[in-house]
Length: 249
Image (cartoon, rainbow, N blue to C red; front, top):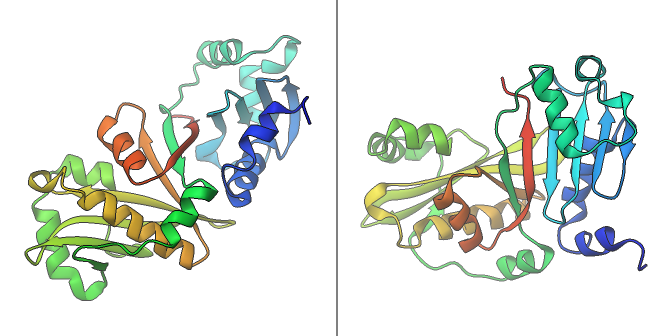
């Protein structure tokens, strides 16, 4: 066991659903290059909008995957001594720009068990289409920028809200992220005057508990420079899994 520190450290922390999903994204294909830190694979089945992807996991490993057409353009495989730095330089030289990484957060198996046994206090509930007037008022009180960043919608697969004096002040929504994976991606938005009171944390934990009950792993993503969102993820009990980047649209 001693010669596999990465597997030993990373396997028990997150569920098999998550580790299998990301392995499939990055290792289903022809592995061009692999060392203890960096792996590059070619996969002809990647979608157009993910024809180049990079994932850096919290254990320090970096995986990259690209379509055969992008591999021909970037040409990473004429080298024996590939590294992340060289790969990114070759992307640059080929005029390929990445979008800018998102943090990926999930519950560790330990924290998931804590969540599932928790009874959340407060004026919280699942929202339905009957709440459209309540939700419209909520959206009208938020800025366009906040609405865009959060991507919280009443017609998503699941929506939860936290109320203060019968007013919806924080909401989270979720949708299944990929057709072939039991992962649900979530967004959350709290109205500015009600931030810092624990509404977002409760609403995130409520919707994540619901996702588990439906057989899904909750996924929380945010841009690296969104410190408020990063703090919320950690406050809600989620653990960073890595940084994920795709080709810029």
